[in-house]
Image 1 (cartoon, rainbow, N blue to C red):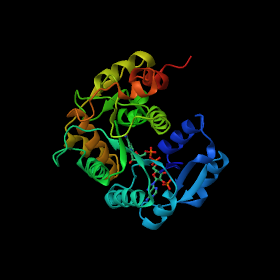
Image 2 (image 1 turned 90 degrees about the vertical axis):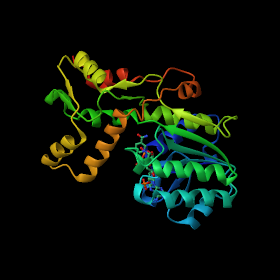
Image 3 (image 1 turned 60 degrees about the vertical axis):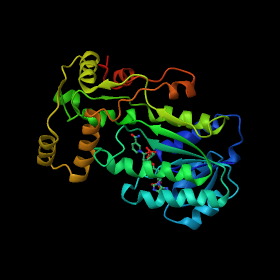
Image 4 (image 1 turned 30 degrees about the vertical axis):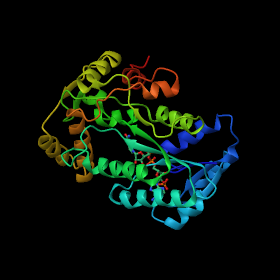
Length: 292
Ligand code: NAP
């Protein structure tokens, strides 16, 4: 049996949909869900649903019993993620899971000086625990979801004509979340991935000035990119009433991109999918192209 954690989330839902397209029976797929009300759609797809919460060790043991492989999707509760991930790895081991595939995060700087340390720290520690666990493991080092680029670009960019972000000339190798999920499903259903560390990055890294130019071309509207200092960025967003937490998140991701934290390119994902990845340019075209 294959169990997918975070099955009610976007990555997990997509991974399960790709698994269902494989030549395996739906009742060999188990979805880990923490709220019964969210299980209906999964049950309708024919997959098994087991209740479990990263905070509840006993529930994880129950859920993992009889499972061979786990797609462990990292938790979204950053403040409590370390203990949650420790629970998950320990419970998987205790329940006899043989192979754990973990959605980690792309990075360069593995020290506290990283602008993304708050996010990276728990991924780095989780990878370490996994390697020490004695279970077979596969690490997926996910780059930024391409799906998030419009939020960095600015949701109203076509009306404002401006992109305002402290990302400098930095490049990002963003990938569609669904393409990462499809590759995860491929890994779960094929052999030879034990001990592998895959970079789920695009084959081309792109900068925000390039994105501004492409959006201008396809939309027919001039888009100008401005990269303020992180301090000026925070002040401007504060003046618009954006909550401090959101400003911190966007600012740290933008500065990380300026510093090249997410610029690594790789053919790992392309090889796992057996086709070219969706490029940032094509993605932006699909969103911002002028309507007929
Ligand atoms: P998502 O839609 O927010 O899904 C998160 C999933 O984790 C949900 O199923 C959620 O369950 C589950 N979860 C959260 N806390 C849990 C707990 N204590 N016990 C059990 N399950 C729990 O996120 P996503 O888009 O699928 O992304 C998956 C993960 O990638 C995120 O959780 C985050 O770690 C990471 N991420 C990566 C990027 C990137 O750009 N690479 C961006 C954002 C996030 P509920 O439905 O019950 O809440």
